[in-house]
Amino acid sequence: MEILITNDDGVYAPGILALADALTSVADVIVVAPESEQSGVSHALTFLTPFFLNELESDRPNLKRFSVNGTPADCTKLGLVEVCPRKPDMVISGINGGLNVGINCIYSGTLAGAREAAFFGVPSYAVSMEVARKGVSNPVHVARAAELARDLILKLNDRSADPGIHYNINYPVHALEGTAEIRVVPMETTRFDYRFQQGTDPTGRPYYWTGHSAANVDPERLTDVTTVERGFVTVTPMHYDLTRTDLLDSFAEFLEP
Image (cartoon, rainbow, N blue to C red; front, top):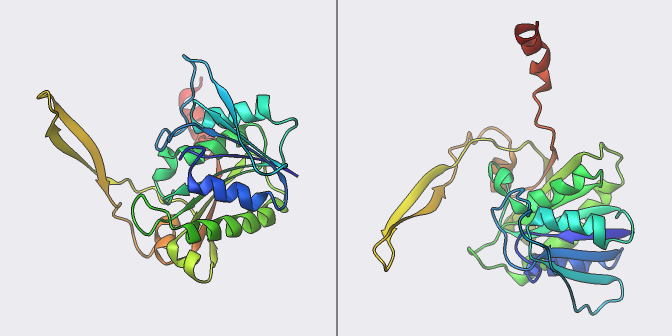
């Protein structure tokens, strides 16, 4: 088996290192990831500058690691087209330090890394984990998430499915410290309550710093947001086709001659 891994936290992030380590026990692994953090870039692609692919040291014969001056979607595309010797059996993006649930899925570079692979018809998975303290990943939690993700993804990959599907997987702290019960749930679509902090830089220019508070969701509705809050691992099947197929016929009758 051959697996391509990318992420949006950067090639040296703890999550991608642990994930690659866990997967080398079952597959040949190729890491193609951004040279620096790309959180929140969504599905951005690079067109105006060239890519520089740098091979990094590896301590395992079945692990190759590359950094790229690009986005997660760039890395997946470059990995599939130029780096992998053949079409890989799957692409995994992560492990992201921080959950990717709700509307964050639209903004997430982690999700974009998996979504890009789905364009190519490759089974793909985005994996994220909750961090107990903002900006700091517990090494024990990271290792546990990598092992759990490996086993879950291998199980999912055995199930035949539409190749356009990519799976969004999230591990809350509760699941990393205890029993990791899984729930298959839809994505929450309620937007965040955005706030902008105003200030002045040293030269006197006013600035706005983006921030937000949690979305005001219905606690009784089972979505990825409410389910991880209850301590369950969430799995959400997704597809890149944004068409509202249920509206095609009615609008065609209205607009077409």
